[in-house]
Every structure is written in structure tokens, then in C-alpha cells.
Image (cartoon, rainbow, N blue to C red):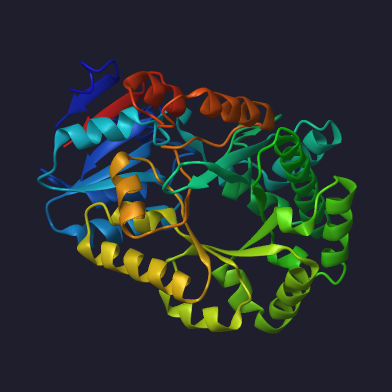
Length: 400
């Protein structure tokens, strides 16, 4: 079915017939965890040892708990898990996953751990010197109307001098040098503010969401510096939402709480990111002056096939609303995801169904294109969907 749809597919019953280097050539690996004569988890372990890895769709008939455990373990090892399917499943669902471009068109991800950290750091500094470090924007839209409500600032996956690299690995390399990490943070913040100013100038409202590292958050002069940068771009602090992770806040609660209070006093919005990864920390919400709750995309994706995940997702949305926060769902990639967010009255959404992250020029063009759509719908035909996904055939390998 994938081959008939235009993808380059190699199929086999015995994945051991391919070397690890062979597997690294593929964009996507469809891996049954119960292969004849082979434990699929061993393949997952082996993938963690190669520098360039395919994204993986794991398949199992042993229940969603087993599937989730393996997927979580793989992610912790740095292996990119695209999705999990519990047998039996509809083949059309897999085809939609691939064609909707859930990462496949981007190709394999390089393991930066195999690249010298000092070389990555030097490449980051050199790229900033030339103003050549790519920053991207992923739109956030109203879950009902799909109207533009702002965008999240993200780093690109290409690093001049290194090539394609996973963003977490890029951040990890930069974080080894406090001065470089601070410079990278302010570089991206400045780019985010400039992008926000550009869409405001075109008449589009909405804040820019920026990820604020813990080290920058607790620095004494950060609130003052951020206000100064905002004013220099002709914006107000209310046009900026600072995103922070649960772990960053809980690990340094006293200092971070004081910094959060300063940012709120200055007028910045605050978002708690990746909610759902650490449910045990939800009681801390009563102590945090956050204005926005961002539910981690993995929870939404699990909710496609898991009643437990659906119940947790719904509970988080209700909790956020009860606490007076706007609730954002990340990773909205299918029409079913969109319907789920609407059913649970999520406020804002972002994800591949709406748009990928993109440079500011492409974002402005995307906004214009949305205005030109007479019926206000997104992705109503195959052409729209392919355009959003960065259409193109993907190289796949099916194991099982």
C-alpha cells in the first residue's frame, strides 16, 4: 500500500538480514516487536548505537501498556519514535501517518552525541556570528476557528558546518558553556521578537512564545533585559509568552518562583510546557503564576489509541480551565487529533495539521494564504495536506 502511494519501500520478514548501517539509510522503520525468532526490543537497543537513525513506528499485539513502555524507553535512548500501533490496526491509519508528513519528510536524525561537542558549540557560535543560525516559527491557532493566535519560536534542525541535527542535541552542546547558552538564548529571543513585530505590522495579533532556559530564568537581570529587548522592537511584554518546563521549575522552586513573579509583574505571559510528562508534579500548579498550560504532544498521540491517555488528557484540560489558564495542545497532526481537542474544549492548538515550524518569511506568506481561503478551512484536500507536510515520497522499511 505504501509503495502504491509512491513511497520507496523495502519489506522483509527478518530484520537481522540488514546491518545497522543499512537501517540508518531509511527515513522510517516499521517494527513489529514480536518478530519470529527475534525480540523487537533488541532492534531498538541496537538502533541507539548508530549515528543516523530512522524514525520508528512500533507495532505490537501485546497491549498498549507494552507498546508505551517500549516507546518511552526508545525515546530515552534517543531513538525517534514516530508512533505506536496496537494490533490489529487499520492500514489506512499508517498511510495517513506517513502522508501527513509526521516527520518522515525530514529524513533520518543524526545523533549529535557521535559528533564532538566542542565542534557543535563552535558551529553554533560561528553561525550566530554570521547571523546564519536558523530560527523557525510554528503557528498557534484557535481550536475552533483555526484563526491565528501567535507562534512558538523554535530552532531549526540544520546547523551550518554540521548539517542536520536534533534540536535537543544542539541545546545540550550549547549548555556546556553558560556564556554560549546565554548568547544563544538572547539570539533566538531577539529573532522571535522581530518575527512578532513583523506579523503585528501586517495586522495579525498574537504573542510569540519563547522557551526560557532555567539558567536564564534565574539570572538576576533577565526580566530587565527582556523588557528592554521588547521595547526596542516596539512591542509590549504582553506580546511575549515565556515557556518553561515542569522540571526546570520544580528543581529550583525558590529562585524560579521569584523570577516568575518578576516576569508576570512586568507583563509577560507564562506557559508551563510539556505538561503530562510529569503528572506527579501537577500539585505544583497551585504555586505557579502561569497563564497557559501546554499539554505535551505525546499524551495527545497516545490518546488516539489509549482510553487511559484520553482520560488524562481530558482531566488536564479541565484542570487548566479550572485554574483560569488557557490550554494549548501540541502535536495536532490529524483530523482526529483536532476533533479530540475540540471535544475537550482546548483553547489553542499547534502541530503539523496546521503548519510546521517555518522561517518568518514563510510564516508571513502562510498567514496571507490563510486569509485568501474563502471557506476558512485548512487541509480540505490532498493537495493542501501534502503542501503542509512538505510533500514528497519517503524511504520506508517494513520489518515484521
